[in-house]
Amino acid sequence: MGKRALAGVVLLLSLAPLAATLPALTLLPSPSAQTTEAGLKGVLNERLNVSWPTFSPDGLELAFTADNGNGSDLWVTRIDGRRAWQATSLGGVISAPEYSPDGRRIACLWSHEGLSDLLLIKREGGSLMRVTEGGHVLRFSWSPDGTRIVYDDWTSKKIRVTTISTGSTRVIDVGMPALYPTFSNERNIIFSGSDRSYFNLWGVDLETGALRRITRSLANDTMAWVSPDGTKILFASAVGTRKQLWIVDADGSNPQELLAPPPFFEPAVVFPPNPEPDWISPPRWSPDGKHVLYASSSSNSAGNLFLVTFNVSVTINYPAWGLVDTQMTVVTNLGNVTTAVRQPSWSPDGKGLVFVDASTGELLILAVEPTEIKIKIGY
Image (cartoon, rainbow, N blue to C red; front, side):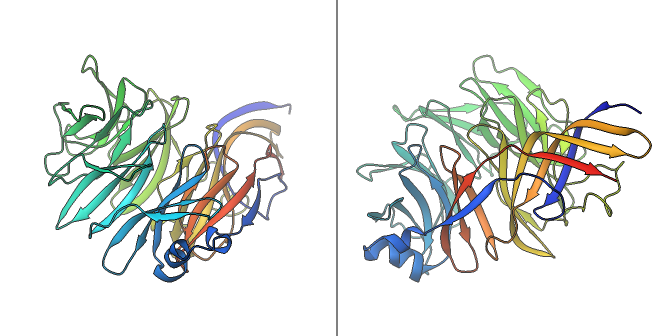
């Protein structure tokens, strides 16, 4: 038979079994190997338990947290390792730092005395602003222009937006319990809301208050990550203890599970299934929107690094059908770069990534050389 099109397929590969051109990864020296200052070396080599690394928008710095034995603090280092400084000393636990889009501030969560407050820290000068006092914040998100920040509250299950320049805060009333908000553009927010017994994804227009439902499932769809161009939404979904990543178009159409092979193929022969993950790190879109990076572990894997590539050209030779040309989403296991990968994050130019080696507590930086992936599969 001739060729015919097949779309919307997810392919899971490891580096070895199939012939394909994959991104080249090069391990770069850790900042601690390049610095002569005791500050950063002390954080990376003595304190261990480094977490939450993230690049500044200009790619010149990394913000991260370091466990000091009694909690964790926010630290910032230049990529060349020539300067490192401690940005907080509050007690409690600092987590999830994120630079504002203009790079002038770092937002983070501060867990203390049973509370979780949202903090803003100026990149230059180090002055601190408490956005919440006595809060229970689970997630926050910068607006694309960096002038506002949206966040939730576990106790009230309401969404709030704070304008940075004035400190004024607006409660966004969506008429249902709402958590895990994120800006999809300057005007719209995506959140996880429950109008009955399950949390699904919803959108709200900040100007009109209009609501739109994005997902409709008998599962708890929680945190969402919007692609750089705003056309795709990646989100975490759980049914009981089963955790998965899904992707949908911005309007909720074309749902696709990323971590499971298609049921009409033969997973044991051609597409080895991904082990059921015990946890999945927050996935990160590449700056160009062509890839997603995440780490996960399972009973058979202690924290591998995975790269999702969209719209890959694949030709499959079926005995009964002949050649089939298709566009696939390819999930590539990048292998054991280290024994336990945690919290990977892209550089702003998409040519590098940083993550934590949980077995040593070190920050590792990889150079990535993205290349076009072409796959041919024959039975």
